[in-house]
Amino acid sequence: MATGIARENGTFLKQVIDSTPDGERLVHCLQCGSCGGSCPSGGDMEHTPRTLIAMINADERDEVLAANTMWACVSCYFCTTRCPQKIPITDLMYTLKRMSIAERKYRDTDAPALAKTFTDFVDKYGRSFEFGLATGYVLLNRPLSALKMGPMGLSMFTRGRMALRPTKIRQLDQLRAIIHKAKELGGQK
Image (cartoon, rainbow, N blue to C red; front, top):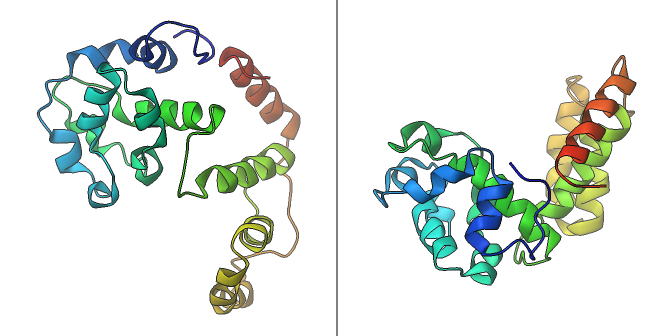
């Protein structure tokens, strides 16, 4: 797997292959539809995974990176396990998310903002922090939806399922070293 996902690396297909673990398997897609037929989120997707692969092959970069398909993916890996060609479809979705964020092609989704809030907490504490996630993301990005979430948040708090302050994991420096190395290998800063 090559590092980075720069646009100068040739065709869109080559960039996707180079940025996806076992990405070379993409060229073996039979267009059988097992991936889309297996997907629990298929009905919410603008394009099925097989259509996305065909669009990648057709060099339809902007349309692919603006699609909601990868944002609807719940990373269950059902598509990957059912694929007769062993195409890493879930990993492909992660690649397309990274590319969409890097090129700011995403639309109609708050997923990048939610992901950033989540990863900021993991970077800082080594784990998610639900109350901080809710306040950091929901209040800043969807303030009106916070009113609907209030009763659930109160219920979680009273049952001891949501802390008001974050806690750090032990040996956080080791996790940070792993994250730093992963970013370095992925060509990120």
